[in-house]
Length: 157
Picture 1 (cartoon, rainbow, N blue to C red):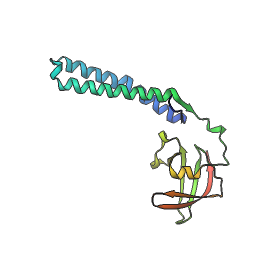
Picture 2: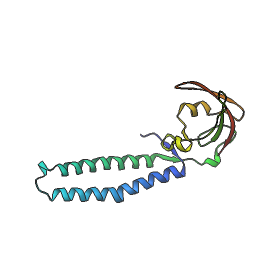
Picture 3: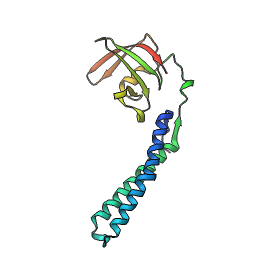
Picture 4: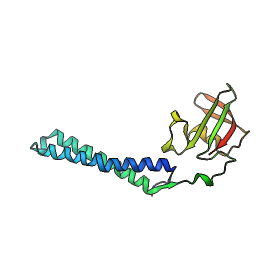
């Protein structure tokens, strides 16, 4: 049995869009490549045919994995989450006590993490150190360069 994964509506929609593209655009394209390579003659010595069959195999594996993820995906209703503590889908504003820098992160499932846009994986060291904390509390978090102490300034959804 596969692990359940939690998604936002946007994250789930992205997965569905990717699956749709793979099945309606990529799959037919590879089928055409196989047909064209097959028309070139002897399959035992046809490198194009072998490459197209390998690409088809990889594509089908990717489609299968996405279908499995979608079948086990669970949508989280963010409206039912407690705003007084940091949880998954919390948007938190933090102040680094050492240098005074203020940063804002949204804690998301690992599959939706993108640090460039402020989406921090809930399984990252920083997020794990923040989970369960409230506004005004401090969190000392071990990171590769040492320890950083953050003060929680704001929690929102």
